[in-house]
Every structure is written in structure tokens, then in C-alpha cells.
Image 1 (tube, helix red, strand yellow):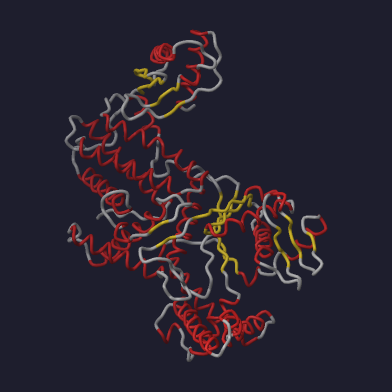
Image 2 (cartoon, rainbow, N blue to C red):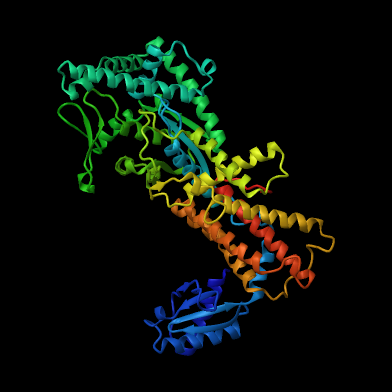
Length: 594
């Protein structure tokens, strides 16, 4: 039974005996920093049931709890708030009850499965900073859900077909001179992305030529020969033209290798990939069954629509008049296919930018109307864009921040700052290189994940690699400090882990650390329920701030007796374990030395 349940039972009994009244719900909150106490009972909310002065009611309940509840050592009443001070024994019992802080906060997996989709790139360009937020967010949410007890499948759908893919293919065919990743020394996704940019440049040249020859800009954009040829290439691909399909397979193969290298570099993975070239025809069969059920309606031109005006939305086309599918058709079919592939799925999370908010409202509503029970558990993990001080990124103009370059730049920034601090002179060259990458990636991931997903981010690389403040490197440095303490303890002759700590008197800083450690399981559940890694990130920062205050104010090896030394070293170990677990949920590594 948790503390609030124990307190609630006794508060109900105290009110019943003293006021002959029956309470049903008791409101608790954290005690404000300017008052003494660990947990506060809100007396004001009882006044609907209990008649009397709130201060006197608080005094009556407080006296009862001190006399009857071992966990409560004293109390104070401020207006209508009863602040309870919990005993040192309560916190020490909590600490000794945790057998293994390495798994603390995590819940064993249940059979309830959920699928998390993230990344979902196009095969006409490399991953960029915008993809990085998507990938980090989706991966972290998947890890948090696993820690909260869910069975999780990670997936992506790769957008490997369409006019944008044909633009890169055509540009390579025209201007590539058989260039390959091997002959160019470029990663495959970068090579293909260069030809997407090349297409755009040539397209703009042709538009300008047509305008100079009297075409309107609108007509020029529609009639530029290079665009018409790309459209013809797409038609050939859909018809299965062997030469076009072979080129498509070759160039997409280059891109997949490039993506895999980037994912490995970032430190994320997937359980299954879906490809738009396999899924774009899915869903058409369900349009027919939806027509029979009255979910869809057919217009005179043969197009099929879903009328959502009663739900405050618009009519949405799901099949063109020529019988071809639209994106909505494909997404309906893909969702259904995923449940066929993984029958234990009871929900899906789509990590997609907030410009697609309306699309997912419509998709989820249509799936519900089609009668799929799992459609009640679909969630659009909508997130804001990532901006740079220099402005908005544009792939076709080549003004994006490439993900691989970003990771490399973050490591370089970490190197520069680390060398200025001069604390790693005894590291080997290999150790330094690994450390710079760990710090750089940690800085990038933490800077992005500490922000609520719905908020837009202005990404500042230099600010993210600061060793002070709410940053990844600050937390990593604290973890490394803890490991240094543990190494010192392991080599100390007088230290033993088996000393009895039950009767210790806690320092206020020790108590504050234990209070924050107690919150970790609830933070994981709250982050899972809100699909928000920011809750885990900022909890970890609060824990680290409190630890550093403890470290600066409470002697560890200079404590007065072996029990205090033992407890404080164990407390350091517990904090380090929780930092490690929390950061693993964010996909961030922690170094043993910095």
C-alpha cells in the first residue's frame, strides 16, 4: 500500500471520530518549498463535508496522524493546508526496499502491444535536422512505453515512390555519368539528394526560358520539359517498365544503405520497415466495403468520399474518379495491414509533424467508422518544427542541415569545449573520439527531447553543448562524477556495503534526494501516458541539480561513522543508476569518465 493510501485511511478515520463526517476523497499535493514538510493535505477541499475552522481541522488531523502513523513524525498547518513531515525511517525503508536501482522505475512487459511509427523519410534526400527530431522523439517514446510495461513494435514507412523520387532518378540519368556512391565517395542518400537539388536547378532554368518566350509562370511550371519527363517516368514506373524499375531499385538501394548508416550513428532502430511502393495500393478493397456500409459515398464522376461534416470536418476524397488511390487510402490500408502483421497490436502512435494534424484526425475517424476496435487507440504524436538561427530549411534548394553533418559538428563542438576545460588529458586518442561523440550526441538529443513535443524548437548547437545548466553534457558530467566516487569507494579499505543504515538521522539534502528518487516510477508512467520524453529529461535535470547540491554540502568519505559513509555512497550509486536509466529512455549514453 502506498503512502497516500495509508494516510487517506487514517485521515478518514480521524475525521469520522472527531467530526462524525465521512470523507470520500482526500487531496494531496507536494509541500511548497517555503514550508517545512514532505507532503501536504488540502483541508479546504474537505469543508464541503466537514464543518469547522480549516486550521483547527488541520490541527486535529495532524495530531491524529503523528499519534497513529509511524511514517509521520510531525506536522504544521498553514491556513487550510496540513503539511506533514515524514520520518527518516520512512525514507530509509524506501531506499532499502529497492533491491536493484538498475531496473528501478521499469515495469515488466505485459501482453498489450503498441506500434510506434517514426522517421518515415523520402528516398530522394538524406535525413536532415527535421528528421532528427522525429527519430529521437519516436524512439524515446517507444523506449518509455516499454519501461512503462508495454510491448512495443518500432516501425517506419519509407516513402520510396512518387514524382519526387522520379526527379532524382531523371537528374541522375541525365547528368550523372554513371556516378555511384563508390566512385564519388559519397553516402548513397547524399548522392541521390544532390540529384534532387540538381533537378530543381534545371527545372528553374527551363521555367525562366519558357517565361522569356511568353509563357505565364503558371504555365511554364506545368510545361517545363524536365517536369513532363519526370511525370512520364512515374507513369512508366507504375506500369512496371523494367528499365525504370531497375534504376529505381538501384538508386533506392543506395539510399537505404545511407539511411541505415545514419540510424546506426544516431543510435536508433526499427523492428519492421514498410515501403510505400508496397503499400500504395493497400486500402482500395476497404473503400468498397466502406461503400457497402455507408461509410463512404460515390460522386457522379466516380470518385469516392467520406463525409465528415457532422464531425466538424470536411468531405475527404478516398478514391479518385479514375479509381486510383490517394494518401488517405494508402494510410487506411497500411494501418489495417500492420494489425494483420502484428495481431497483438491494440494501438498505434504516428510520429509526424504538426502540419499533418488534420490528416490524422480524418484517418483515425475513418478507421473508427470502418469498425476497427483498435482505432480507438490511435494517437498522432504531433510535434513542432525545428528552426535554425539562419532560417527555414528547404531540401530541394539544398539548404537543409544534413543529419550526418550535424552529428559530426556536435562532436567537434564537444571536442572544442572539452579541450578548453582540460579534464581529459589522460585519455587515449580513441577514448577521446568516443567521448566527443557521446557528449555531442547527448547534447543534441537532450536539447531536442527536453522540449515539449508540441513546441517549436530553435536549435542552437553551441548552447546545447554547455557543461552548465539544463543540458545533456551537464547531466553526463554529473554521472561521471558519481562513477569517480564509486571507484574511490571500491578502492577504499574501510568501506563496506553491509553496514546497517536503518537508524540513521538524515541530512536535509539526503532526504531531498530520496524524495526525488521516489518520483521516478511515476515520472515514467506520466511520460508514457503523455508521450512526452520532456518529462523524463527535466526530471533527470532536477535529480542532478539536487545531487550536486548534496555533493557540495554533505561530506561523503569524511562522514562521522561507517554507516553514514556506506549510505551516502549507496545513495550516489542509486542516483547514478537512475540517471543512466532515464538517459537510456532518451537514447543517450552516459560516460564513466569525463
